[in-house]
Structures are given as structure tokens and as C-alpha cells.
Image (cartoon, rainbow, N blue to C red; front, side):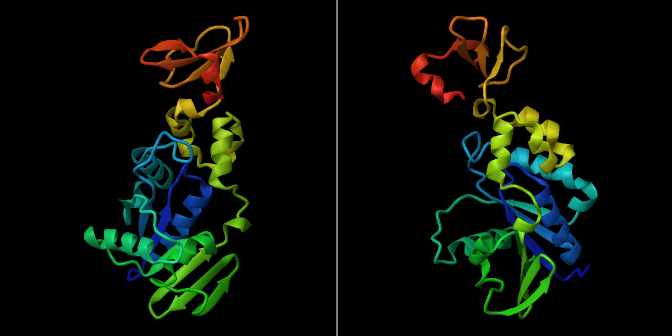
Amino acid sequence: MTEERNALVIMRGQPLHNGHAGLIRTAKAQCGRVTIGLGSTQLSGVVRHPLTAEQRIDMLWATLGPELMQDIRIIPLQDINSLDDTDDWARYVLGKIAKQKLPEPTDYFTGSMVDAKWYFTSFAGPNDEVVKNGNETVFVRGGKRLHIIDRTMTGFPPAEELRSLIELRDPDWKQYVPEAIHEMIEEGYPAHLRVALRGTSFPENPPEGLAFIREDMTPPTRFEFRRDRWNKVRVENASKFR
């Protein structure tokens, strides 16, 4: 471990999965200090952005633990609608780090070339020295390094597929997510984004937004829990609640 090196990892963590955790641990092992940029913190409770920034930060702490988190700092990032052919996003991220007086990153870690392209100017890229080590490719320019740990070789599905499994209530998602946060996801994932539960009596203590299909009614009727009561969903609106 070299104390003079400072890693940067950018992620949304919707949800945090074993691939994210592995990338952070690799960055920590190689650099000692890590800044995690948590993306799209202005969004939550909607498609593609189900979890709040606070939930995602709690999941990082629960997964990595206090000892590993000692030299890890988290900065919230918001979408700025930067264009693909500009360095606006990288300048925004590095500017946020500088404003918080955190160490300037020397190394950027990511899982794909697509994600890396935003940082070629600020760190290094395909036109620079290349070092390969298994599924890790490192571009080197002076004191800057850009690390790509190919996520296609890890066997982890994209976050979109994980969210789909969670929303369909398919327990297979658990094999890709740290066990320490399984309960946090089950309890904290927005109920209105998940498929309706089914049965002949309403669940006790339902979360806000839960959709439920009463199978003892003719025809089976869809309800939604809002403002401390079950509300029947009109037929024309039923498609909103899968």
C-alpha cells in the first residue's frame, strides 16, 4: 500500500452489489485512501433510482465496515447533463473533491472503458502507457493512473438486472449483493416499485406504496397502501402497479 496515492471510484450503488464492493476494496488495497463519488443523489423512489443517498451510504458502511471505511470518504454528486465529448463531468467531480479539501485523486478505478472515457484527460487513457494484469488494465500518464477492472469478467449482472430481480421479488438477487445489506434492501426498497403481493387478507404493517391483490374478491382486486389506509386502484390506473 502506498499512502501517497489516492483513489477515486464513482458509483450510483442502485443497489450496492459485490462488484462495487470488490472495486472499492481493490482501490483501497492499491492506494490506501479512497474517495467514493455517489452519483445521482438528487433522485430516489423512481425507476432506475430507487434508493436514497442516505440508504446507499448506510449500505456502504454496513458492507465495508468501520475499519475499511477509515480512509474512505464519500461525496454526493448530482447529474449535470454533461455531453459525451466534453470533460465537464470530470471537472465537476474533481471540483467537488477540491472544495471539500480532500486529497487530489491520483488513480481512477472503474469497471469498463465506457465509464472510463470521462476521465481520460484528467488521468490517463488509451494513448498512454498500458499495463495489463489479469482482468485489470492500467493506463499510466506521469503520476496519474486509470484502472479498468473488466466487469464483464466478474460474472455480476448489470445493476438494471439486479433491480429487476428485486422488483419481481426474485430471491436470486441476493447472490450478487453483500449479505450484510439484504435486510436493508428488503425493508428499504420502495414498495411502489415492486410487484404486488397477493393473498386473501391485507398484510400487517404494510410499507407506504405497497400494491396488494385481493384474490378472494371477484374479480381479484388491486389495492395500494397510501396514507395509512388501503385504497382500491381504479381499473384504468391498475397498470401502474405491477
